Amino acid sequence: MTCRDNKDLMMAYLDGELDDKQTKMLQEHLAQCTQCSKELEEFKSLKSMTDNIVLSEPEDQVWQRYWDNVYNRVERGIGWMLMSMAGVCLAVFGGFKMVECIVTDPSVSLFLKVALLVMILGLSILLISIMRERLYFWKHDRYRHVRR
Amino acid sequence: MNSILDNSIPVEWSLVDDTKEAFETFVKAHMKKAYFVALGLVGNHDDALELSQEAFSKAYQHRRSLNAQGKFYPWFYQILRNLCISHLRKRKHRRTLPMDMPDGQTLDVPSSPGFEPDAIAERNETKDLVWKAIGALEPKHREVIILRHFQNLSYEEMAQLLFCNKGTVTSRLYYARKRLKEVLEQEKGGQPV
Image (tube, rainbow over the protein chains, first blue to last red):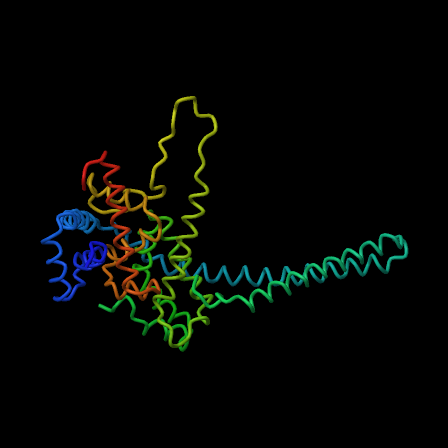
């Protein structure tokens, strides 16, 4: 076994994750390798320093209010979602009505009407193109089931 | 005490009992664990509270994406850690230096921004140094230190939470501790740990 193989054993040894056979293997290596032995002592000291740290507990009031805060977030999330959906519907409807008014208004010049319709056609093509591209990449993404 | 990976409560909540009361029971059962994981990752009380609450809210919104066979806590943990890591990334980008520093003067930028010493109990100089050094680690290294030292998880439990094998956990712990040792030595002006 090399020193590199023993690095992982060393961690497991420090954390009490080794079985008897692995412990014996590591101890045999440590008896021969002063460098690994020294490194283990340093890691022991580091572990003891880290184990001494205890995170401070918030006041009881924080835990009493915790659930209310989570519930408010969930409730507001639903509120925002409904408002956004309604906003999109209203914007689409309003846009449609506006275009309808302009197109059917005899006082608006034909040039402006044609320009508006061409712009809407262009926007629609762009939107469909982007959606088709997204859909294609999503279907062909080999890593889509991989947890990111 | 239930194991951190015990999924009996959450799966009931998520797929069978979808009521407000069941969700409340679930939040109350896991809030401390979620808060302390977030505190270890982001280093201060306010952000940890905010992010852990946000994680519960997101878990509720996406509860249908957990299937009956899925272990709940690793799924929830992924939501929480992704929120914390995303927050750390934003915090890193927000750090800006003033443009009008006089010549020759440097700003003492902390190596662990957002890591407040009052997040630890019974402070002393050594503990403050170690906490600061943990804050200076890369998130993936900090994460294994927190799970091992502050959450007291076994390698098996850590592997399940991190969706990797025990070998990867061991190796990541080695590099995390090695880096922690280097940072501490730098903070102590080159003295060994």
